[in-house]
Amino acid sequence: MARNNELAERFERELLAVKAELLAYTRHLLWRRDDLPDALQTIMLTAFRRFSGFQPGSNFRAWIFKVATYEIFNFNRKSDRDRRLRVELDEVESAADEIDAEIHYDELLHKPEALDRLLNAELAAAISRLSPNERAVLLLRILGGFSTLETARMLAMPAGSVMGFLGRARRKLRLALANAARDENWLSPAKGVDRR
Amino acid sequence: MSLFLDSELSSEVTLEVQEHLESCRSCCDRFERERRLEETMRAVLLEVGPDDAAVWDRAVLQAVRARRQRFSTLQKIASLAGVALFAALIAIYFFPADRRELDLARSAASDHSRFLVEVREEALLPATLTQFRDTGRQTLPPGMNLPAALPAGYRLLTTGRCKLDDASVVYLVMKHSGEPISLFLMPRGELHRFPRFGDKLRVEPVGVNCQISGRRFFGAASQEAVACAVGRADLAELQELVRWLLAG
Image (cartoon, rainbow over all chains, first blue to last red; front, side, top):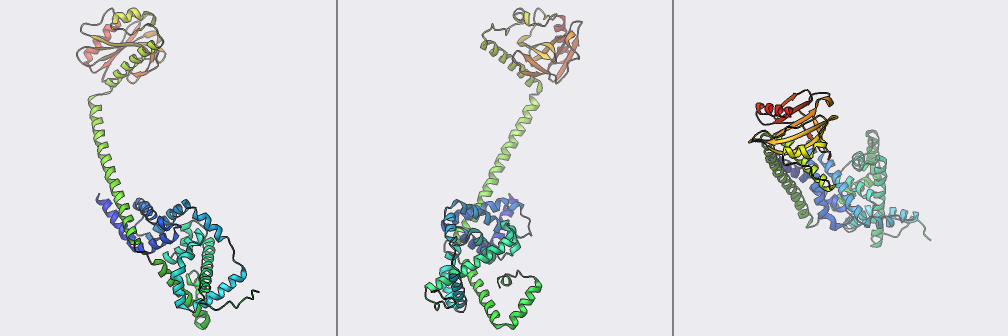
């Protein structure tokens, strides 16, 4: 019993160090916000069950993010939203729209206050429109601070695929932010492409 | 720019980019803005809802508690299993193998009876040795006879026929005042070896297996037959019973 208590205390101590990042990661990687309590509980149960096999001193952050990723993917698989979103994401923007958006994004970078407002309002929605792999790769980079190789190991995919997903995720975010800024009339009309 | 932001470039390329950023105001400006954007994104994503922290704490608590409860249940099961194992060891010590062997013999007899009832033949299970001799005469191996009567003070529990290798064997389970004793009688001509502890016997006609086992064993042979006795009785009692059986 003493050993169990010690294990539980160590588990809680290790978790505390990644609490903010893992909580945010779980919240943003889940398709359904309502699944958060169940998903967190499943993650914690699985993690604690396997924790006795975790080597003290090795990378707890990578270990727990990997456990969480698989559990969240399982939750998302149960949701039919995955399929619906994939259809939305398959809609390819035209080259002209993309160039417009890049120009707007560049302009947006020079307006930090507008950018902050946009991020607060639009970031979560924009991330929720990414594909499952793009989301996971982007969140693991921004929230977990994992390198390409660490992410590749965690998601069991080649490093090249991780870089591809990350690039696409960033591009889609740029487009989403630029489009949102244009819709809000915070930016000047597009001037890079003649759209007549 | 993204690779540089993510520190994914090799040290040589990183150095080159850094040198360029030092000399190019436009790129340096862009890099700083992108870096700030990443930091803001991280900060926005890290913002948790008012209930999220409570949901986290509850999940951790439940996981740890559920595990502890499981350990506690496992401990209870382990304790019960330990007690059961101890009881089983005690039972094995006080009720050794010969008793189980006798149970097998009784079980064989019971199955034999059921078999006979099922095929609607005349019941052959005897209440006395005389009945066994009379009703089972045709089933006794050729040249094998049983004594006319049981030794004084003994009661017959069950009888039957079985095979040891290819040899026909008649078995009797008898009781005096103590534990039951199993006796085996077989024609000498059919045997290729002397019976011993652990020999498997196939009870006829039901096919149930029993075994020559017990705390003590005594065997002897006459011109025609071999007999042995197993049980918890004194060796002298077993010897006497074997002699009685061979005299038949």
